Image (tube, rainbow, N blue to C red; front, side, top):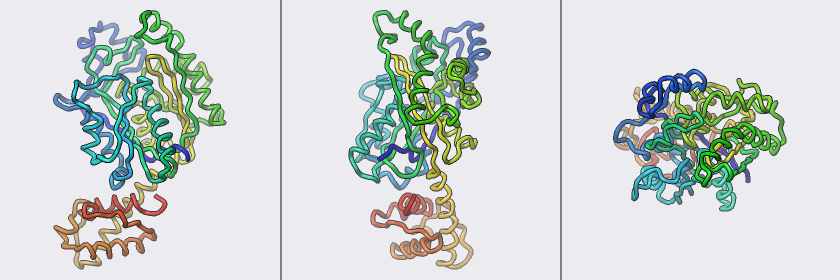
Length: 403
């Protein structure tokens, strides 16, 4: 079995705060603020509104996964990847709250923090290994990443990172359509841990060795995937700053235009979530095509450097396209079945508004199979799936052969 990203999504709060507005809050001088913008390419970050919680942030990303709907029963694990061990006061538990909100009560939920800001990659690796061990080809793991920033250390790091609030989510599978994991390389350097007895010295050495150590792990991941740098279509970075990635590119001989740096000035560094946010941007802007091999890399204080190589698949796009076709076809078929000009939308209630019975809805499914030349496994269908055009469409996409 191979680890696959079956779906990837991201969520950024609407509220934007510029580095100039952050300056007084972080105790920065006007000159230091100008350095952040002029030399490090940092412009603004996102922040939640007062009263919004970490569970709200993570839920935003999870709800943006189109293929999660209708497949909640397949989710065996919910894993929260985050950069710091404690993100909420006891007894608040964001990952357990998220699990309840999404209706994933049968899943096992836990948190990964071992690799700090590179924990998102570790979570993907662990999820894939656990699913492969379980042996259920239909099982999924939901990985979410992101956290609120509420301490000085989490707002601004001494190596010119400004932390923003944002979240990412992905569905991991042991095989099937999606982005296939080709390699994973990680290295840990305890002597660079800023929590050691020589904390300040460790931070200085971390900054000095950062470019070389990140470069080494990138090259290692590429080698493990039996590739060269020329085969890497795109790099999804962790969004520390623009300068650090220019240095890495010079060090390994990679054109900087192959690194997606668009989100550095727009969102800052979102601990562990950068990978997912950049993936969503790459797909939305057409920078990843089926068959492209891409790399994502990052570093975490402690110190950890890691990189993964994936081959971008077409499964996510096929599912999105199929859902659109299903919604359109249901509108046509309902018109034929009920007669007249029906104004059907995804919100149209099949029982309450259209008066369909369970048996009539199954007839509708049979007609849909013939119309789209697909076959749908209806063994697990229940009344919730038949509630509306949208819920029925979600079920069809999740249970159609080959999707």
